[in-house]
Length: 580
Image 1 (cartoon, rainbow, N blue to C red):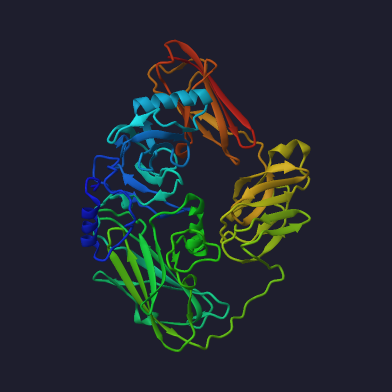
Image 2 (cartoon, rainbow, N blue to C red; image 1 turned 180 degrees about the horizontal axis):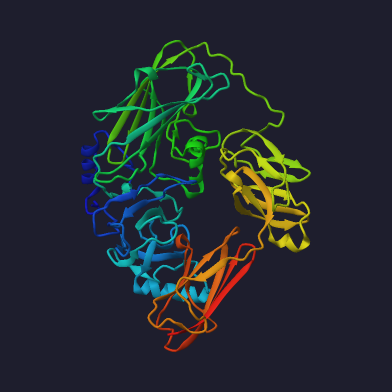
């Protein structure tokens, strides 16, 4: 259900009654303006601020009964301000600007209403491209609250049918939690804690006498979290804490994010964050908000309750000493976590730690290969066959930089360069340049950098050739080498073809083409019928390029042709003559 018809004061009273001392997001957002984008009650597959790979989720993922074709409505008066269509991301998406200074976003759509669809088709043909990103002037396509604007779908990066819905500030494009605008989802379920991590931060800090991270699983009994008596922890020096948790709504099994996390020591707030809003430019800082190392090793999502040196995520409030606690006495301390969802459902967990003033010095291994890189400065590493430039603020913390080389692999044109490790996250891209070894002139335009994964698997990272070097912009560390891509994409019809010169498509709704590439990936494609460009959509999840027949194709014999080009300009073509 939604509460857009309720006045602010009544809505505040209801929230207070439901959540006790909940005072979330009482910041003046209009709660009587926006209706629901669907006609059924809201049920979420994902909520605002939920942790995703390399970003925070910017809106609601609204369930559509696991099917496509659910009517989607304009949530308030306004005008279509942007139409974006891509095989990736939000797929087919609409942006509506509203007079109150907010923009609503509707993603993963199946198709638009007739007026918007006709306008969009004209843009496709004008640009001769399936991918478009078009800004519209105010008043060109106005909408009223409750107008049918589209049908829900599963386009773009969606992993199942649903509606992605956002509310943004129009001027700044800052996404804001839709809950702040009065949207309500039936929810009487408390957040769930699945684990705790304790981090020795300083060189001489210890947990149970060791300079190692300690993990604890809670005991859950009768709706309360507690710790095992054997989990009483001895700590010394500067210590950080982290928590793994999730939230669900009533009747849902989806593990969504919690709204706020608070850490207390001795009853005093040390750390607090809440997910009212964030900026897209800072969303990637989620990689330092979580324990990225543990994510890479064990696929966990531990949210750290201490803030890295370069963390500009912007969700933190009144954090003391970056959330790091100094245990330097010989006494018992109570650590308390308080987790809340937006409805005010609250989960608490108390943990007893025993502090010691007698921490032993940590014996660290010193490597001659290590150089300390300051995350606030530009850092460079140059050798005769490699150049690395990491811009200022690309790293989240100062690091001990490590680098070494290993012999060539089959089919490569350089040594394998091992840069740091894949457990060190990056906020910005750095420049990697590798010197090519015995690369023939004929292959220079086909050369690229690849990362070498487990079992020798190679992933394309891109790059361009200049004066014997291949350079690329990368956002991950790892192992890299130079290779070439001379193989064209593979394409084949997604329907039975006996004779390419006489294909019967009288009853066909689409012409489907399966397209894959072995390394650099499909960059662009072009389809024509009788030599004229036609709109061919790209469904990446199915490796499918497809043209949908319309009234423009008259009965009779026609010629279909498609060219598919990868990122290194290798071209594959397929054509046939068909009868309509």
